[in-house]
Amino acid sequence: MKCLPISFLILALATVTAFAYDPSPLQDICVATNDLNSGVFVNGKFCKDPKQATADDFLFMGFRNPGNTTNPLGSKVTPAFVDQFPGLNTLGISMARLDFAPGGLNPPHTHPRGTEVLVVVEGTLLVGFITSNQLNNTLFTKVLYKGDVFVFPIGLIHFQLNCGNTYALAFAGLSSQNPGVITIANAVFGAKSPISADVLTKAFQVDKKVVDYLEAQFWYDNN
Image (cartoon, rainbow, N blue to C red; front, top):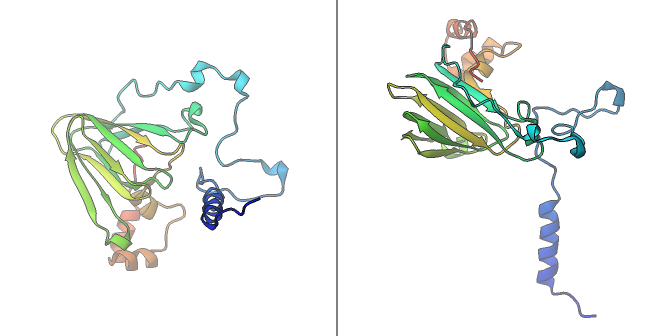
């Protein structure tokens, strides 16, 4: 038997290494437990017996009607994640509908587990994302019109603002069944329990009165 070329062995080892990884998390936390009576969860959702699945499991009708934009942000995000659309389980994709009143804002936020691609169906949107500290927090921003598509890389802070005088509508696809949403202002100033004022005053270089004022606000969640 001839010896395999060393290059082939290196390629085989590299291939095995590439596929030997843990699955990406599908929720914020998943603490290990040996107590099976405490409630067992998996990385994602349990699966229905495939023999009991129906066509309705793969149908989501939540996008039929406009979202209610009568709120402080003037926007409404209607998610079709696995919690709302069980047929997405294990498929690695999800969607969202975004409705905007004139001047409406989907405020700076991140999706820790998914890249987002957005298409404008009606109106005009000012959109953008900010890179990490490694790339000097550079802002990439564009004004989008009907039919335009823009992508927001996974985990980066991004936003959408209706900069027009009419209603705007967009749809987003995301690369996770549960991409998660962290709205920056809500998380920092509306955390349960509150972040120490000593932390926030130094981080934002502002007076404690400013922090107290911001923490006292009602941080609306448009999702």
